[in-house]
Length: 197
Image (tube, rainbow, N blue to C red; front, top):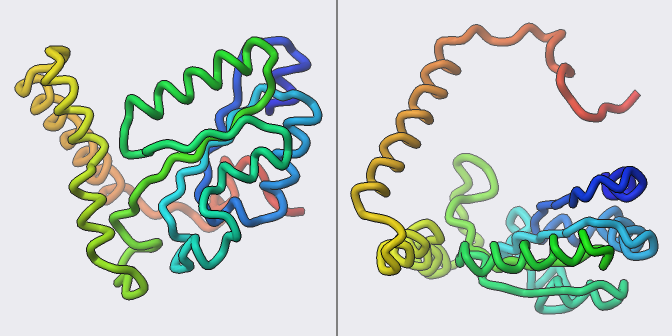
């Protein structure tokens, strides 16, 4: 994608989201290396929740911050509180502006807290419940709501209406899914971006 953008001179920027577990795989390193060599307008945003499935980051990675790896490829790396929406917005905006100006790729590591398990029904016996509780106290949406209300940009009633509208949209989507027939087996590979041959 980044190479296509550069060749077409479209002014676009590719933003890649992935977790800390994916940062320990070969394609991650290959992508960073090529993005720097070709000075591609790509921003790599790692949402580091400290857990690759049930493996702790401290066990699977030799450095405490994944963004440290960016320096090994000659790339700008930035670490931030991923639970602060405004801080993430600022970092991504800066990286986008830099990429559009021809500055090449950037790496952003957003430290976040995963509330749920890796899969539905995961009992999370491998982690301390205090970690989850701390994450809920630092809820990104609640923190943003509080900042916007304190700054006068948002009223409590407006936020409550947004919550109601979002819940209604989710309820409608669930009702549609539950009322819909199961797809035919031959549809299993439709609308996929890639498949093995």
